[in-house]
Length: 236
Image (cartoon, rainbow, N blue to C red; front, side, top):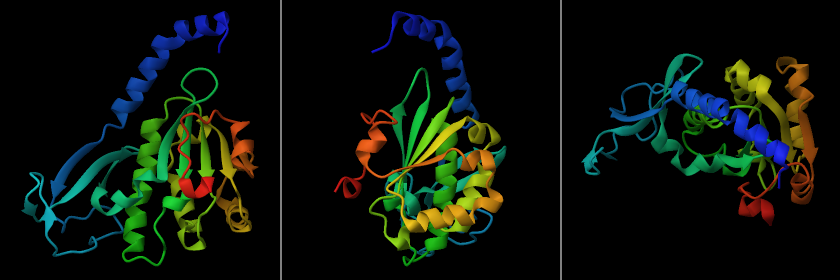
């Protein structure tokens, strides 16, 4: 429930907020297209997994193409191999809004990351990295918070320090500034150690935004949970 004054404020500022959302979505417009697997999707991945195998074409028939997503990150164009990361797309979801206006809740579920022992792990993580960063820019219009679901995540699925560092460095300055809190649910000694080691390349302001919660009930005291997609393994 909101008061009459809050309702009036929302009505007054809605056109400006809506314009900001449309501008943000337009700026990071994404497209899909099919290209030959020999093309390079990212700078450090010269060949995709399963080269030489038949892939479905754009018309659904057998072909030799892959599904790519073209994104703009930091005014630079990147292509994401959507086929190879399809099993891991639930790693980042929109969890609704909190407070007044368009303050987004972004949920990052580590349990949906690939296991480090799987084939083509580095190629998958390279593309998943681009997907996460571009999705973040698409989902956020104003202030936001991130819920990092760490519970029920095996050690083999924990992202490495290098991957986290790259994510942090590639996130737009606007997104770093507008991040109000990074809530880590069910923290382990490992994730605490990773964050401690990461201090040299993470700003003090960012580190001060990190908070830990040890249960979903405790998390519910911080953010509304109606639209937060909690993985079943975390609930259990």
